Amino acid sequence: MRRCVRVALVAGVLAALAASGVASSATGPELPPPSPQAPASPQAPASPQAPAKPDPAAAGPRQQVGTFEQVDTALGYQPGAARSARFHYPGAEYVKVHLRRLALLPGDYLTVSDPTGAETHRYRAGGRWAMSVTGDTAVLTLHRTGPVPSGAAAQLARLGALVDRVARGTAPAEPPPADRVPESVCGRNDSRDAVCYRSRYPTIYRNTKPVARLLIDGVELCTAFRVGTGNRLLTNHHCLASSAQARRTEVWFNYQCATCGGWGVFRPTKVRGDRVLDTDRVLDFTLFTVDDFGPVEQFGQLELDDRSARAGEELYIPQHPAGLPTRVALNSDQARGGSCAVADPRAHGYGWYTDVSYYCDTQGGSSGSPVLSRNSHRVVALHHLGGCPNSGVRMDLIHDRIADWLQPS
View 1 (cartoon, helix red, strand yellow):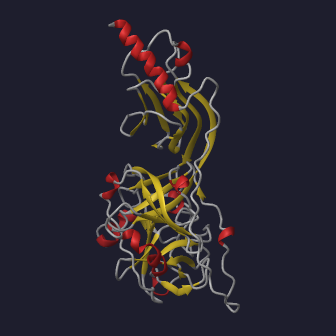
View 2: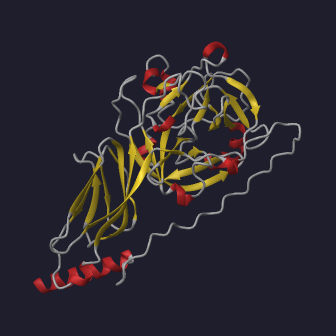
């Protein structure tokens, strides 16, 4: 019996090597999967009298919140090999490790967790970015479910986990004071934590729940939100343009402050992006799915408006400016009457007359946020540009493109 167990374990080693693609030589660098070709964008009509419009090819980078570090940390099966590793960066908001290689014996698994184990992600095979761990410390642990076979030293040397990169994010700073504002904060920063509106404006507060923070490639930020009743989310094309990029993106729901003006934050529910269903460079939108819809279905969805917004119509924007927990731009000291409102319902974006402009406060990281009407509580624009006035793509134009994708399956 003991011999049969040993034969089975050695066979398991060989199977693990074959399944993970580990050969007798060292593995090469990870190659990203090919990106699907984006749908062709409609051409904007010529209008020589119209003012110059922004060039999508010249769009600025996404908001960056973190940094990369090269490391060389291995967990393995050989005698003396480490079974756990700890990555600690004081003051970091999150820690995210890249597994260049993960090849384990059958039944074994790797966990990436915070020190308490309250947030734990489990992996069994493959090289990839692990899901980030909230806080300043990530703990990796190789869990064995059976004995390690003897007599297969050469094969065992090629099993285990290899971490080659770590991304860590700095904790978001407070919004800048009124005398030091980025260009997309128009005048004084009037946005507030979402929870500040829970009692007085419960519908507005409820409509912050389907809004998610995107963490792209470990260090860059945008915003997205759920639309329709199924697994569908909207963001900007300049945030996500391909399924390959979506799969390198974390989608954080319920990343919100627990009290108005406080620093206590709910632990977010995190999933990965999955498939891009439609995208457009001029209308600057991407419709995509997530890989695990069940945990985020509870946060509800926003309804899209298929009409044009009206001049003077009051607005609000739930968003993740600078990667902060959800904030809402509802008021503006630059708008007549003090409320966020439509300044121009037919402004120029990346195409002629494609945008709605407003003086609602936004910042880097707000790209992809929903712009909602305070009358209908439906989305009338997809925020994408700053400059005071800031602007979002008209939702009536986007709705025509994606309506079929939103039908119940």
